[in-house]
Image 1 (tube, rainbow over the protein chains, first blue to last red):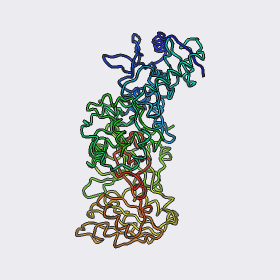
Image 2: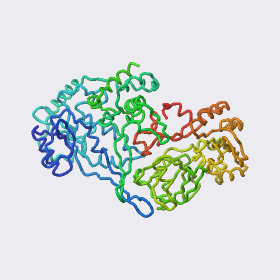
Image 3: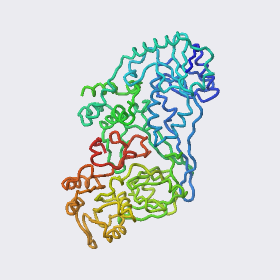
Length: 340
Length: 279
């Protein structure tokens, strides 16, 4: 598909122009954090970032979202309306690891038999513009171990690569091409493509943190009862930060809220790190301690997801490593498993 | 396309208090829109999410058989927020029902075989669905001998008392009802389910055992069937886990790589052996 060049200082202007036409989610600086938020009229996108604090999965799978509404009648509470809003929108400047996570989430929410309309509607109505990682990465970045690359178009409709004075703009999908008019008229030449390949190779080399993510699958298949599982969770606070920041964690709770005669059924992010997650009404809990919960989280990412969808449910963004308050490092967990 | 999270509107048509302690009731629901009944095509062993707006949802096995037309029944113990709200309901109340969900009792696998049904206490509900399905009209011919062993702690805790009497009248069913301890009026068997299984000693020849009950019953019943020579492929059971979505997305009911809500709840012991023992 077509490739173009835009001047580097034109990027913010393009995002703001789009924001006049649709909802644009872009990285925004808020105090010390970079967060993906709807770009406001006077808002300024911030593209000189390594990665956002939150994974942008909330664009398709909000932290809290209404599923339906109901209302009180004489004969009881009855369904009143289905809530499923999906505005035409653009996710602008997302990192390739996070764009990779959308492909992984699609496998779960958009299965053949059970389709999750809430996720799918937002996904279909959103164009993903990836911003390749060409700067020196975080020490916690390990995308190359989990089928990702710092310059990758996976999960993207448009890929932007900083090649020095310009961004190379690649339109990956027809959905991306629909936005071509925002990216000027300058066609990219072969030199730009060569430059991009050089930069991509260098960026890949710069990711020095590696984990044996594929290698542990056959080991996990056989080591559910290994005493190793006693060694991870000791300091875990069960805060759930790892799961909330994770681009691929998708577990949710469904609950009802009522005000007066009207109510709403909402779904909210949940976490396998919480004791209540699997606790049954009888009091029985199949995952009785933090040990079982850590085993579940690790197994889900590196074994169960592979069994079910032939893909590892980790994109190597390193957020769980960076923000764990007690420094539990999934990279070390995986490394240790590989030695079992 | 139908949104699987939106319940079908139903009305509580009939409520039957099953047990003396009054905490287990059977709720009969009718669909508000007749076409929804056609969409809610289920197989014995499947479950539904009972949806009470403002309270939440509860996954419960379907207790009626698809051969019973015009309604669908669930037998529910009062336990948590949703089931307590359900128990407070009166006939005529409107609510929601999602599903049917999960796999089912493996009817094709069961066809042509001798069937041994073993149930304990409150876990008899989807077995009742299976029995009523197998004995309905011409369906009966598709199955060999049907032996039922059903136990409860005392006579007052037996479910479906009228049906048990009707089933006992049939000559094409071998019904064994037992209680741990009888009362003054009890004329039937006394004894725990595993002991009665041993006494009835169903043959393993061309036979499948379908077993549902509290963990303690399962633990002592399985060895009896192993001693009788039943293979793990021919012992079938149903699991329960905490659930929310019921369609394999919300992520809490997995046992290893399998979701109890969509890959189960029915598994053979041979299948369970391949999963992690985390349920």
